Image (cartoon, rainbow, N blue to C red; front, side, top):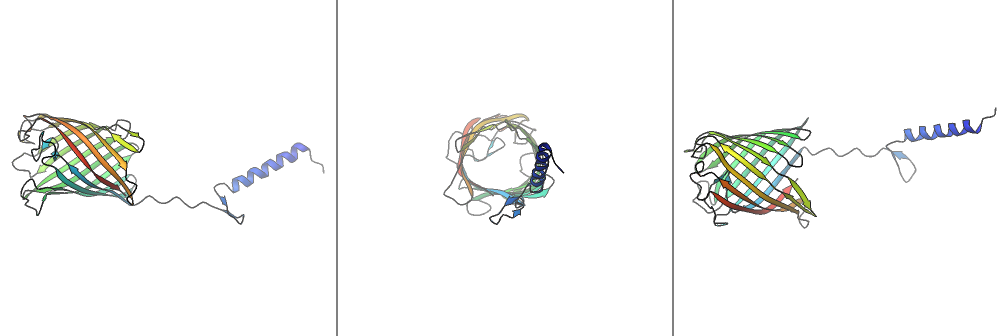
Length: 271
């Protein structure tokens, strides 16, 4: 039986396509055998961050805790922190963390120069660019414990907008329980190896939360920079920032200055 040239060409093309389909997703070894590529590495179950930061001020939602005001660096403090995130699947995670305030600005009720120890735990959920975080915190300082519930909604885009509901549910005498609501954005960019962000926040208090009136409480704007540190093992970075605060004196009767500039510098590790 004779075959036309067109029939032979079509048969060869069919065989080539069949062979390609059978070997799709495989690679050839030195012996010529076809093997499937290794499966992608599973995402880590536990991730986290460690930060070792020096701060010129300890500012808690607009309150200048150590009364540094415009005396830049006179009441500086060391603030180590660590947070762990446990992947629960389906976009959910569990969160555990701690933050310390270490300085000689006052006699410590905890020991040595440790003025405050905060611990927290909670859950987060992410779907697409939208994330929700609910965290319960214990702030332990000056022989008392302040109890906090934070709920944050954030959206990851060029502006990174967020809203935080910071609720005090117990402690912090003589201040009242109540709520601070913080609206923020944090646009960012890169300049070579340096990652830059520009956080801006505006907040409002309920009456008595910081010992004064309710309403508008503070506005802040800053710049943060982060650059990788290649000579340390792991994913370390050198982080530094400046943030300027304007606070409402009727809301913060304990702040020594209504407006002040703060600074920070330290090392961070993500894992």
